[in-house]
Structures are given as structure tokens and as C-alpha cells.
Image (cartoon, rainbow, N blue to C red):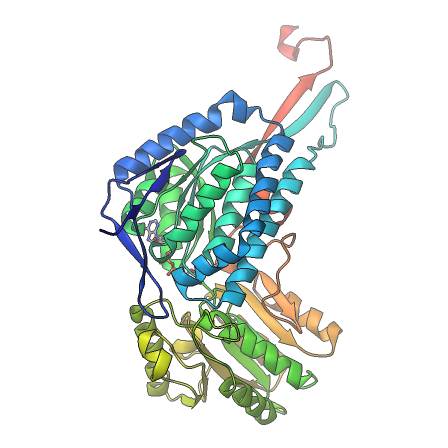
Length: 490
Ligand code: NAD
């Protein structure tokens, strides 16, 4: 009989009360592991224990450097096991090893950065408004945090929530995506090994609509930190509104990339292809709408198509693979349905446009990197997030129309600009309604630069010092220096 992996409930490894679930390798459908899932009763137990744990004076009064020590250790353990963690994440979601290795190293960097942020965080006195009163404003933890994550970059997005929440002195219940629970359970082991006191972390796999919903609705949960689709995010925002608690929502995207006529077209074509096709397009920040100046449109498209034809779609464990399989059959069908819809709406598929078959492709869910032309920005495939390797290319003539169209989206996550003119790049960057703009590069990240979206791409920012403050609340304290009573005493 296949072993059922335990879940991690408030410092104990045990079987959850839910039905066991499977993790399968998207490259060939083989079984990675069977893992235990939680029920609402498990959620209640984890939240109640988390509430006790974060209020425990030994954690409540812990010095920042003590919390930092745990996170430095987490970073060390992640780095020491980087290859194994990367291999496990590849098994879970099918991303090529080179990509998952990058995500693992970024997770280590996040843990180390949040350790340093926590240790070096000075609480300033606000400017003083009365000579007989000393005013201070202190930051305190929020309490029990619900962290809910998607399947596309789990190790990075999970550490991006856990590290700042723990640095800030909270307790966290992590509900990973159904498809990628294995890496989340490894993260629990890492925090345990790093010495995080019992009860402060639980990892509860299970269905979002059941376990996720029970978690966010629990009265003791005081913040929802969510990364995932916009419709789920909206539902969670309703729950948060009802409970009057705060949220951080990192949601979907339909990011524009813009190639001006003065761009270095070779560099730009590589950047544009990487921006949309890496991770097989399963990235919130995928540059899915491409605007190219009409004077270089034909030349650029030709370069891009040639480059796209040369991309190696293959087994994610083969070292030189550029693009791995999609996460599942149902997701592949949804991507293909969008491509068919694009054609119905008048689009022309200039490369790709179908599932790949033959050899290794027959065992997995591989889709050809696809470029579509002939559509306007108002087409469905330009407005809705496909979350697959599908790029729509649109020519533009003048900057005003370009900006109008680039901003004509429900989403506001990211954008790319390709030009040799940095003055223009900055002017355009300031007018794009998004949370991140890359100029002459794409998908590059710094842990110290806040990340997040506007419009329907989300609320709040992760990373940076603000990323830790998002898990804290301020309290103002007034200390009288006067020996006089308040006025009514006279
Ligand atoms: P999803 O919204 O379906 O699921 C995300 C998580 O929410 C999963 O753990 C799921 O189980 C849980 N969930 C689902 N319904 C729930 C409910 N009712 N209550 C509580 N939890 C619930 O998203 P997905 O398909 O896993 O991920 C893809 C989406 O994530 C895309 O839209 C992508 O753009 C977005 N994403 C955004 C970012 C970002 O930083 N902005 C990063 C990665 C992915």
C-alpha cells in the first residue's frame, strides 16, 4: 500500500482527517506521492493552537534577533538542500529544473532578507507635537495569518508569506495549492529543523473551497495573505470585509510588453519570448500582450517567430529544456480553448497553436509556444488571463493610443518596455497602470523591491521592508512628561 504522507498541524506530523490526495508529475502522469489532507476540524485545531502559540510570552516577547535566527537557519537549510527541493518542485508542477532551482534560491534569499529586515528594523518616534508629551508608535504582530498559495511557483510564494509573517512575530497556517502540497510539507520540515517553536506554523493541504474557506472564515484568523486567481481573491476579499480584517492579494495579470522602434530588436525578441514562454506562460507576470511599433512590426515578428520555433519544449528534467509541460490536462484544454476562440474572433496563429504530440510529448501535457496576430486589444484573448504559452501581437503607431490600449485591461500587474531611450522609457513607465515595470529586461526580481499589482491584479505589496510591515499593526503610545493633571481637574 502506498504510504500517505502526514500533514503538519501545529508542530505535529499526523494524518489529517480528510481523504488522501495525490501529487502527479505533469511530464508523464506518474505518481509522486499520496498525502494526507485536512478537514474543517483540523483547521480549527491548527488555528486555536496557533492563537495560543503567538500569544505565548516566549514568542510574543521574543527579540527580533531571535526570530531572525530562525529565518537565517531556514535560508541555510533551503540552500543546503536546493537541488532536492528544486527536483521536488519540478515533480509537483512540471517546471524545468533550471527554473525551479532559481525559485528555490530566491526563497532562500527572501528568508535571509526578512531575517535581516526584522533584526535591523528601528521603530522611530513620530515628530513630537507637544513638549509635555512623548509620543511613540510601535509595530506589533497581527496574530494568526492565513496564507493561501497557487501551484505555479510554490516555494517562492510560500516563503514570501511565511518569512515576513514569522519575522513580524505572527503564527501562520499555510494552505498550499492542491497540486503542489509536497513542497509546502518540505517547508514545514525546514521551519521545524530551524527551531521555530511548535504551534506557530501549520501546513494543511486540502481543497480551497473547503479547507481554504474554513481557514479564512475562522474568527481567530486576523489576516488573509493570498496569491492566486482574481475570482478567488475577490471571494476572499468579501470574507475579509465581513470579518473586518486585512488582506494582501496577489492576483492575476495580462501584462503588456511594448517594443518601440528604437529598441535593440535582438535583445528585445529574446526578452519578449522569455517573458511569455518561460514557465510555459504559467506566470502571473507573463508578458501576454505585445505591442510593437508598426515601423519595426514585420522585422520584429519575424525574429520572434524564428526564435520561438527554436525553443526547446521538453521534459522538465532534461537540462537544456526551455519549456516544460502544463500543470494538467484540464489546464491544457483551457489554454487550447482560448487559442480556438482567438481564431474564431479573427486571429491568425503564426506559430504553435496546438498540443504537441509524439515521443515524450505523448506522456505529458505539452503545448506549443503560440503567437497570434490580427486581433485588437479588445479581443477576449487580450483581456482574459490564459496562463499558458500564448502571445498576442498588436502593432501600434502613436504613443497616446499605445498607452490607452496597454492600460485598457482589468489587470494591472506588470509591463515591459523595450527602447534605447531611457527618458521615454521612464515617461511611459510612469503612465502604465501596473505594479512593476521592466525596461530592457523582464521577470527580473529583487527581494528588496516591493511587488504587487493594482486594479484586479491585487491589493498590497510583498517583499521589501513593506513586505514585513504588512504583517504588523501600529500602536501609538502617549507618555505624559507633565506633572499637571488633564484640564478637567481644574
Ligand atoms: P486559484 O485562485 O484557483 O487557487 C489559489 C489557491 O486558493 C489554492 O491554494 C486554492 O486551493 C485556494 N482556493 C481556491 N478557492 C478557495 C476558496 N474559496 N477559499 C479559500 N481558498 C481557495 O489559483 P491557481 O489556479 O492555483 O493559480 C493561478 C492563478 O494565480 C493565476 O490567476 C495567477 O495569475 C495567479 N498568481 C498570481 C501571482 C501574483 O503574485 N500576483 C503569483 C502567482 C500566481
